[in-house]
Image (cartoon, rainbow, N blue to C red; front, top):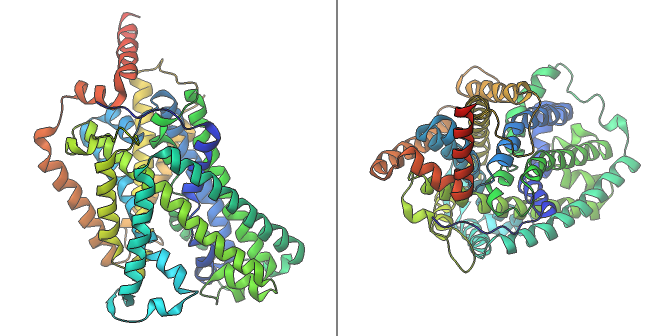
Amino acid sequence: MQNLSRHISFPRLLILGASSVIGSSWIYTNGIFFDKYGAGGEIFGFMLATLITVLASLSFAELSSIFPRSGGPVVYSYLAFGKRWGFATGWAILGAYLSALSFYVTASSMLLATLVPQISTGPGYTIAGAHVSLMELAIGVAFTLFIFALNVRGTKLTAGVQAVLFIGLVILGGLLIITGFSQGSVHNFWPAFAAGSTPWANVVRFVLPAMTFLTGWEVVTILAEEAAMPPRKIGKAVVGAILLAASYYIVVLLASAWVYPWEKTATFSMGSITAFTAAGFPLLGTAAYLIAFLGLLTSFIGLFTAAPRLILSLARAGLLPPQFAKINEKHNTPVNATVLVLVFAVGFGWLGKGAMTYFLDLGGFFVAMAWAITAAALWRIRQTYPTLNGGFRLKRLWPSLLGGLLAILIAVATLYPKSPVALAWPTEYIMLAVWLGLGLLFYWLGRREHQPQDVALHHLLGEQEFTRLINVKEQEKTE
C-alpha cells in the first residue's frame, strides 16, 4: 500500500488548519444572522461553539499524535469500533466537507455577481426559490476546476498557496479590527440583542451554523501522514488552528458591530462589507469583500485537499473501491479520490444559492456526529491500549467526552422538529437521507472488498504504526 511523503512543517500545518476553517460567507451573512439572533447571538454563539469545538477536538489532538496517518478519524474509529463505525465516521466528515465544497461552488459566482450583477441574470433554472443562471453555474464549475487542478499537484503547492493567502487574511482583518475599535463605539454593539428577544435562546440557536463555520480544523489530522514534525506537535496544531480561526471570526465580527450600529447592519444583504462602507470607510468595505474572496479560496483549497484523503483512507481499509487508494507518484496525490471529490462537489453545487443554507445546516449535523464518534473512539482506545502515547496526552478524558456528548446532543437536536436547531422540513431531511442512502449503497456494493480487520488496520496504519500497535498489545498481555 502506497504511503504519502512527509513534507509539511508545523507553521504550514497550523496555517492549513486555520485557513481551512476561515471561509467566506461569515463576513457578509452576519447581516442575516444579526437580524435573526442579534449581534450578541452571533458573537456569543461563536464563543460557545468555539468552546464545544475545542473540547471535541481534544480527542482528535491526542489520537492524531498516536496515529499520524492520512484520514485521521477514519483510522481512529476503525481501530476502536470496527469497519462499520470507521466507514460511518469517514462518510460523515466527507458529507460535511462536500456540503461546504458544494456551498463554495455557488458562493464563488455569487461573490463575483456583487461586482458584475449581469452574472446572476440570463437563462437558467430555479431551485428552492432562487434563480440560478447558467453563467453563475459555469463560473462556479470553472472555479472548482481551478481548485481541483491546484490540488492534483499536491500539498507542497497547496500549503504554500495557503500560507500566502492566510497572510493576506491577517493583514486585511487587522485593518478592519484596528479601524472598527478605534473609530467605532460600544454603543453600536450594546445592547447586543433585539428588544423582546431571549438572549440565551438566540446564542444557542446560532451554535449549529457556528459549528459549520468552524469546520475544517480536522484537516490537520487528515493530513497528519504528510506532517514532518514530532507527533505531539500535530495535536498542538489541531487545537491551535481552532483558536486561531475562531479568534479571527469573533474579533472581526465584533469590530464590524463596533464600527456601525448592528441593527442597521442587520438590514444589509452583504453584512460587514456594507457596514464598513456605510460607516464612512469604503476602502475597508472593499477589504471586507477581499476577506470573503480570500476566505473562499483558503477554505475551498483546504477542504478539497482533505476530502480525497478521507476517501483514500476508506479505500485503504477496503471500505471503498481500491482504485481510490491510488497515489500519483509524481505529485504524491490520491488522484482518483480527488477526481471523485470534484464529481461530488459539482454534482451537488448545481443546486445553487437557494441551497446554501441547506448545505450549512447539513454540514453542522455531519460534523457533530463525527466529533462524537471520535471522542468515543479515544475512550475505547484508552481502555484497550492504555500505554499508547504519542506525546499529546490528556491528563483527564472528561473534557473530550464532554465535547463529544455536547456534539451528539446537537446532532440529535437537529433531527427533532421542534428544537431551535432543527433541520428544515422536508428539504434538509431529504438531502440527509440521500447522503446516508449513498453511503449505505457504497458500503453494500463494496462488501466483497471488505478486508479482515488486521489487514485493514495494517493498510490504514502503515507498517511502522501497525508494528508498534502489535508490540504494545503483546507487551500489555505479558504485564
